[in-house]
Amino acid sequence: MQRIFAIAWLTWKAALRFKLFLVIAVLLILAVVGLPLVIEDDGTAQGFTQIILTYTLSAITGLLGLSTLWLACGTLARDIEECQIQMVVTKPIARWQIWLGKWLGIVTLNAALLVISGACVYGMLQWRAGKLPAAEQQNLREQILVARGSAKEPVNPAEIETDTEQVFQERLKSSPIEKVDAQEVRKQIREQVKAELQLVPPSYERVWKINLGSAKNHLAGKPLQLRVKFNAAQKSPSGTFVALWQVGLPEKTKYWRSEPMSLAPDTFHEFAIPPDLFDANGVLTIAFRNANPTALLFPLEDGMEVLYPDGGFGMNFARGLGIIFCWMALLSALGLMAASFLSFPVATFFSLAMLLVALSSGMLADSVESGSVAAGNEETGQAGHSVADVVLIPAFKGVLAVISLVKSYSPIEALSSGRSITWAELGLAFAQVVLLVGGVFAVTGIIFFNRRELATAQSTQ
Image 1: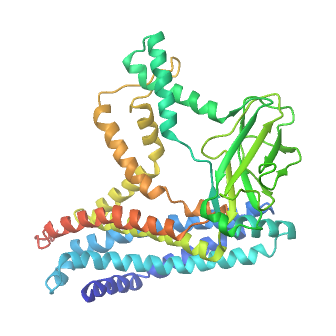
Image 2: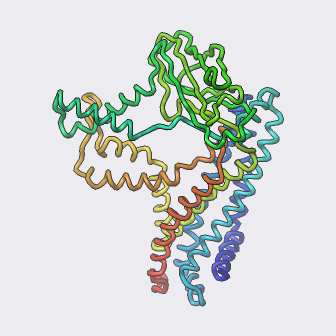
Image 3: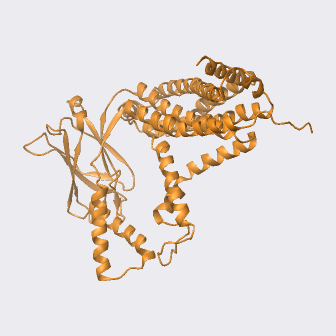
């Protein structure tokens, strides 16, 4: 470890000598302080947090990510190209120790920069919050500057697939379906099955039973929030729809019925409900009655959600920065892996291309969902087909599986909506992002670095 720490310290000295640490720190502080001053919020808690948390943390992640890739590619590739690495490898130190030492140096640089920029964001948040109107300050403390846990009704994908297959087989008996169209037909049937679970026709009622789990033990006397979203089959003259809610079970638990609410479709709504409405098992029963002349659809993924207090904002913010740190550690490993076998410009291009693929995962997901990389026919509704599908679709599935391990954690979105980031989530993020995916990059990079010839003749021209 002493040799690894020595290489890490040399990486720090290089970053300080070339003013890299100072430049990035200044850019981060300018982004944190400048964005809230230049962009005015709309005076609401939501607009305030979008400026302070969403924009500034996104800017921090972008600046740190690009600088991390550039530094990781440059610190190893340039040392090799300028023959400085030869003076190091002649010492009693293994190449894997050099590689890990450089990774550790970049990671600790990122940690220091994250602490500085994170402290600035937290300070700006507390300072600017004091300038909001009293009502908005209360909303901010109850909905944003808090760590709220989340509970939803479980979705059973296996049950949906079973119903889909049953309907598909019945349709095959009544009318033959071409093999090339089977995937598209299954997709349409699956959406119909999901729609039946999500749709609330006029004058009908939809009931959710949401288990709060072990959280019920510390929620006595504490009000909860419902976060709902729905889509409408038709537009209303006023642009809103009447929502009637009742929570709890009469004669079994405490019971609450809402006044008629006027809610707009296609957007999230949050409202508080009284405490202690769940039963002894921690199950909260929520009923919605559709008093509108048109059907309403509550998405299975985010149509109904129960939010409950689960800690303070300070530690939640620190855990969010911890997940961003895991992302930076992964980018460090990616850049060093590329620099282990490529020159500095090519390694940088390769790393940025890999990052672009990760950011474009939506296009890959669309191809996997349709089963083909070819475009479909919009007029006939038929899916496209290509000879390359046999190779590319399985490859896309593998890439998406890796990307999902990293992108499944979104601390910026969680912090800006007051969601709880648990220690378990942070630990899982470290295990998947740093140890698993980053470990694969590290092993690959060390293997390439061990096999690379470092004493090749250099051209004098």
